[in-house]
Image (cartoon, rainbow, N blue to C red; front, side, top):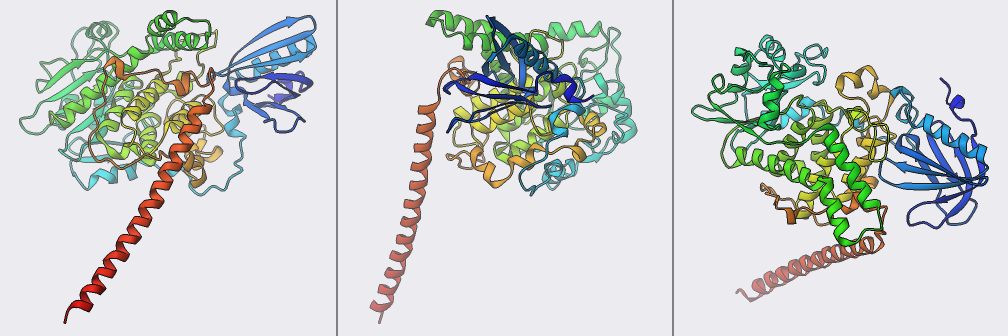
Amino acid sequence: MEFAELIKTPRVDNVVLHRPFYPAVEGTLCLTGHHLILSSRQDNTEELWLLHSNIDAIDKRFVGSLGTIIIKCKDFRIIQLDIPGMEECLNIASSIEALSTLDSITLMYPFFYRPMFEVIEDGWHSFLPEQEFELYSSATSEWRLSYVNKEFAVCPSYPPIVTVPKSIDDEALRKVATFRHGGRFPVLSYYHKKNGMVIMRSGQPLTGTNGRRCKEDEKLINATLRAGKRGYIIDTRSLNVAQQARAKGGGFEQEAHYPQWRRIHKSIERYHILQESLIKLVEACNDQTHNMDRWLSKLEASNWLTHIKEILTAACLAAQCIDREGASILIHGTEGTDSTLQVTSLAQIILEPRSRTIRGFEALIEREWLQAGHPFQQRCAQSAYCNTKQKWEAPVFLLFLDCVWQILRQFPCSFEFNENFLIMLFEHAYASQFGTFLGNNESERCKLKLQQKTMSLWSWVNQPGELSKFTNPLFEANNLVIWPSVAPQSLPLWEGIFLRWNRSSKYLDEAYEEMVNIIEYNKELQAKVNILRRQLAELETENGMQESP
């Protein structure tokens, strides 16, 4: 298919662009295969370059021969284009609709993008499982890398290499995979060096109504326990939902077969409930007519902050089991690709200082989201504005980023990255020139040959010039476990995402600049103090030598 077939009118003059915080601009609108571009001859006006894949929905209005297209973006921005001529307006609208809903992944922009920067680091090879394994293999000899899934035959949503107990062979893993949803047998998610406890994750066990069991599964998860110790299974479904799953062939671990494990149910919502929550929240944020009572009731009705609280509470529980109880844990919901990953990754941010650095957080996203099989292509296909709701969309990753922001806000000096880093990850998960978030799992990415045909997001982010935008000036390495508050008054709305197109951040930006300047000036003064101290010590030494006989 040629993009030209979808572009009925490639260019229109005298189009007026309206967007948040900018004056209206008149210019020429151009459509390419992947971008909507508006450029103006007026001085000091920024061009608009908008990826078609960032467009969530469009509305059309007509007054006489003047047409208006309202573009609603996946990053929650709303842009208005006033186009002279009804025919041109209709052509542009139908072209945008076609180009923003391409079915084939290989027609998306990452396959056509060529970087304008020098590639110093190949992001596709920055966080390989072997490198991650080396970080804790020096502290324990009880785990090994398994290549049982190298052809993706055992579990289509797992990576080719996984970490499992050394005492369990690959044949046993194959048997366990037939007993777990989607073949997702328990694998290592995190090793706590302080006490040797671990977080494992998996899909639900396929016990069904007749209480099916699997000896190899029992042996695998018991292999993670120390003598005389109990473990915890955190199920991210309510007990009721977990019991209902048995009727469909799923279920949960029976205590009779797992006597050393205590099961805890921590209900976290999924799928359409989360999507509806996001839609309600964005609608409330965009409505400027609210009085205070109406705004607060709409915010509450969206339930967004309730979901944040549920996820953070489960993550804190997981971290408590590891650090305070000295117990290993297994986490799963149904598939083990959504709420499970939210909890495992947030628990690591609480427990592991490395996860709070830029590279450590990138490794966490790679390991616990991309390689762990979170279906980004399905979950992020649409955002808060799209009218045609399918079953699979859900802002699971955005909720995770929001939870990270909540912890960052409570511990502003413990994170090497800033809020802009989290916003950037949200934007690229939904629309990007990079191939990192394409596909639903490693198997799909392999078939698409993303490593050969597209650029990794990390190759761009980790350039020194880009990193400076995402670095937190307040950061001071903190090697302690950090315990976030989940009290309702501790969890505010993330304005940097949900209100950034509704009100100007000019004064916040100015305050941030001033803070950076103060920190830099403080460093300069500290350096001068150190020099003067050295000089004073030298003078005192010289005096002492002169005075001694």
